Image 1 (cartoon, rainbow, N blue to C red):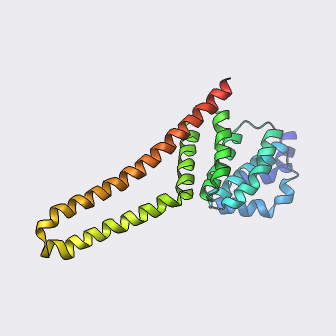
Image 2 (image 1 turned 45 degrees about the vertical axis):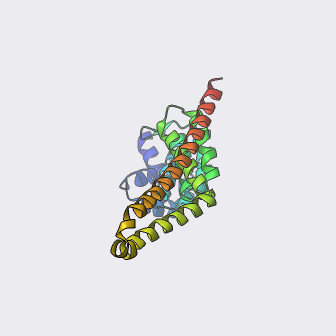
Image 3 (image 1 turned 90 degrees about the horizontal axis):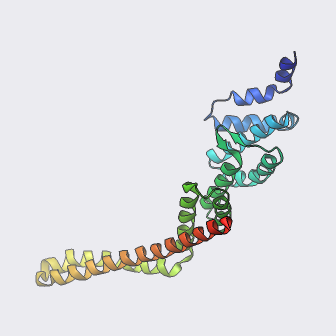
Length: 219
């Protein structure tokens, strides 16, 4: 009788969990229709529904909504001492996806703060360090207007050189074709070298920062 009563009292939980895994919009629709009733469920069941509902907002690309929901969910996970859902650490997964949302929203400084915290929590998880490198590179590329301008000018010059070779030098001044080709190749290699050097510099800086985070935790 007790088990039947428990099933009856938490029937919304079982209905929600029977929704097909990838039916994200259906999960969202169900949650928002029964939001108040879900709040009266057993605390463990309520938290699990919140977990999968919040993930569903990310899966449909509603990154702003996920970020706004994640803080409440992370508090619930801590308060209820939740470990794992579906063999995944609930706290780390929500925090990581929150960082990914900030990256998608081009909020790189917020993403960096979250990824640093994740690296402190779990330094052995390579996914966190990989995301940290990606975020750092995208942030620096976004902020470096000089590099963007230089790249645009160089690309325009290389394209112009190609057109001049085809339309002028090749048919009228073939003796200068080798020189023109050398100049164009030098410009292309220079552009490539500058971009690679810029990326390498920030990659090394990011690695150094991650190493310091790990050493600080060990200390």
